[in-house]
Length: 291
Image 1 (tube, rainbow, N blue to C red):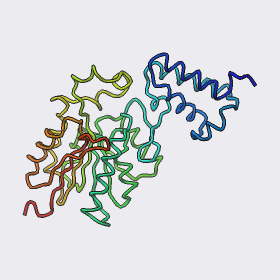
Image 2 (image 1 turned 180 degrees about the horizontal axis):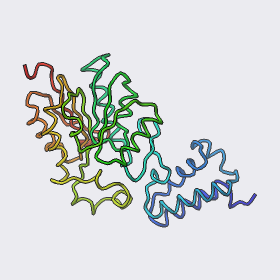
Image 3 (image 1 turned 30 degrees about the vertical axis):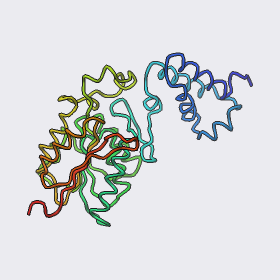
Image 4 (image 1 turned 180 degrees about the vertical axis):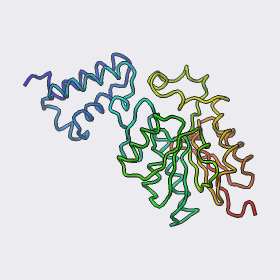
């Protein structure tokens, strides 16, 4: 066994290459865990073990991609969301922890509004990888879940995730809420594109250079899709009803105002994430609001 072929040696070399290009060196460890299909504890136990040639090539190929700016999740083809592995490709945004919070808060509020009730109709608008829709279905199986996206490629990824994770979700192709028209929905969740195009130059190249721009940026300083939702949802919501959207940290007042204007009798509030930043807006439509 050559010392240079051990897991410790190739890991050190991978970290060195990433650090040399200004990338996060720790990503090398996550990549090696993926290549060897081991946990971090198992990797530490195996650091002195020899790594096979095919695995070595796989690892350094991934290191080269990450050194060029490709996110780790696109290299491995997966990301964890609410404890479940989701397939991700450059056709969809990489699911993020903030969106896990959107799902968690939505589930909690749904449990309060409709305790123990099955048969609710929930829609995820702009589903991307399907993370919101699939997770909601798996956490509340009695809910009828539908997901929309304008991108056929994104819908293919979302369908694959639903199949792999055993979630029965319906998928509809179309722009925002358009595919949902003509029906009533108890719950609507959305993590729409909300980044101001003017802010793109300040973002990491690993994001702007690889994640789909259609799923990142929106006109009107990032607010265009919230305006579309505020215009379309009043005709689609059942009563009682629940709407939850993810927002940029500085968009709370604007989105709050839009939903309050659209649902004047509803309770609308900005909800902060675990880091104390404005991250969600929730709108609860009371059952007797429009009697």
